[in-house]
Image (tube, rainbow, N blue to C red):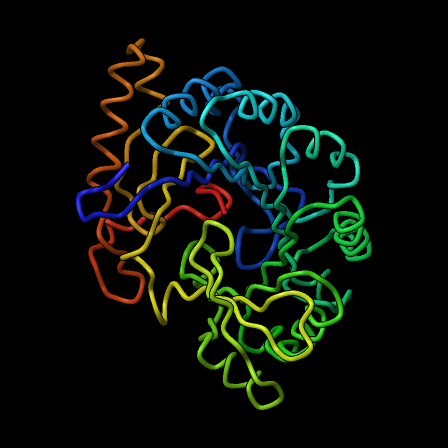
Length: 325
């Protein structure tokens, strides 16, 4: 569907849990975390109903996120339901990669062809520090297993933090030159615990890379997101840059988000949206629900204000695991 300023909204990032098997420093606290009670999560049936309605108004692509989506016990049933819905042309997954091994068969069977894996360092010691646990070796093993199994596109999402992992930029570039894996450098957003760290502009990242490599723009459309991609003379994969702060892409934004507890977020930064869970549980008809969702998306905010001082009551104060990565 087309929103009020002419953007085609076709992409839903669907978070199915706020729980995670890691505690990444910029994402969530190490202790005293208040996860959603089971009854506050959208049920399997509610998720299927909502996605069906989204598909009727023009949503064609779904990305399953969390938290860590693979920790939800009925993940496969959710995936099977979405895979069965007419007009959903693409289902993809964002994950920390730890639980992929036992899920590959079901993922492939149900149409997952694109997997984004969050990995902020190639240093096992720093990995343990940033994630506060987990197995670096297991993640690497699963990345290569995804390639072996023929996953169409494997991407690594890397959030750069000044003084933490910003000395690994060329290590990641060389990784994408050695293997057919896309590396995407993502500017750290001032959301939740991320406010405690210093972001690194992708302009600076490109400047560092260009000291050692000539970069060539990749013109083909890759994926559903806002990344701009480049290659070097040696690339097997691509080098991508997502710049929500230094060069926002709001005028081309094609996405909406649904949180684990059913809140339709129209922009990552703003707290504006609609609690679809409450509406559904108040017994609305599908036609009524479709009109509510259509009107909300039509009035999607024109832009975020992450780099401006705005009223606190307009900002979403939840962490990324609660919103959906």
